[in-house]
Length: 536
Image (cartoon, rainbow, N blue to C red; front, top):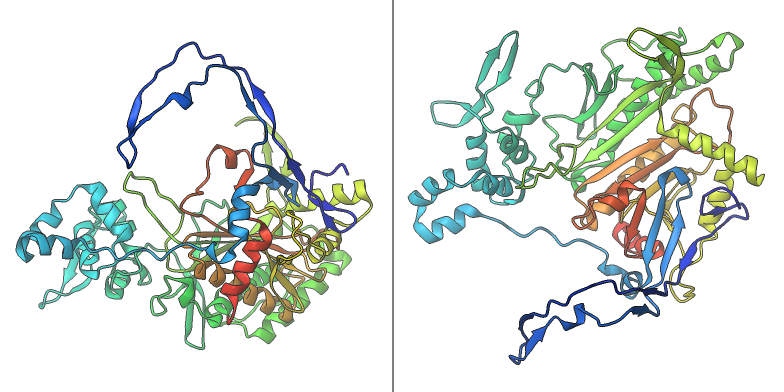
């Protein structure tokens, strides 16, 4: 089979098995014998094994599985058999421990008393303060860190009521004294909510981004912010949990919260396409009901089918979700987002102006969208195998067999499914704990997703995120691979990837080459996820 994919057109997964055995020429000139230390019985431990006299024969190193990603532009996954076997014996080991309780204030107070502890706290080195801001669980620590990071306005009783601001030209900015410390402490779950509100959550405290949408129902409250000056050139939107609905953990996220954030994504996307097509627009200063949203979607589908629809400047949607935040004491930011849960979305153009240089214009070039990479591969796969890719992929997921050949262990990759979608562990995970969501019917984007499918997607996203959280994931990046609305491919499915960052697998040279190293079989991770998802 020529496509570089693990999905065989027969509807089965195919993988490679490396059985390493090789010889190594010894080209070392000198020996450097040293005593490294002593064993428990006080016998010396030397390093003579590091300096063999002759050549080396590696008769049988650990076998390594190589699994091409079903979508080959996402690289390949490599699984060391010995690592995976250790976890296969007990999939319950696939989880992260809860963070330990940390209180510098208590430690210092016990050592030197309250007054000296408070004075010493303020003199701690910046890297220590940053480490505390990220890891402390004591609200006393975090309040002290917050007050070191910025200036507060206080009432007569000394309680903070807001931030102190200053004018910088035409802008008004908060008086943040230590930016990294400020950013890190406001993202700590254990900071008291009053400080979260005053420092980062109240509408307007982070800047002048306009609120252009709102969803509130069943105890949930979500704002839609316009990010006009955006890294996405034509602007994007963010559905943020509101200041009166604090959500720093996915465990606290309700079904209504997920419905609200996704509703704002659907509503904004449908409204923008309706505007592009010249349809009657929704009433201003209101939120569409689920029925009104579906009616607008149907009108858009009908308008797109007309010969007079014409070529639209925007032809695809973009959706993403960064959850979690961490900051290393060394100054490296470890994830892109703050923990108050939010999702981002935009529309993507079909093409963009092309230029050879600043003065010479070229033909327009295709604008990038990650779903286009899926579309390109689907065409190639069908052309070379005679089989639609997603039809074969869904069949392969159903027909999955373990790589280790053990019939006494669970074979399934699916964590959850309903009539419209499946939540599953991909055969080739691009992060240690990646999950994916796929539509089962021929739905390739959210314009093709009816009310039932949208509800299924929202439900699967909630289950997927909370499953990962139950296993201990604290930083997760999620993306959507969607089909262009002007595509005639009926096979391409709407696909979501949920990719956690783990403490021991943040990404290095292997990942930069799209070589993803894994320590478990995907089937065993699916077992761990099904157990964690029970009851959601």
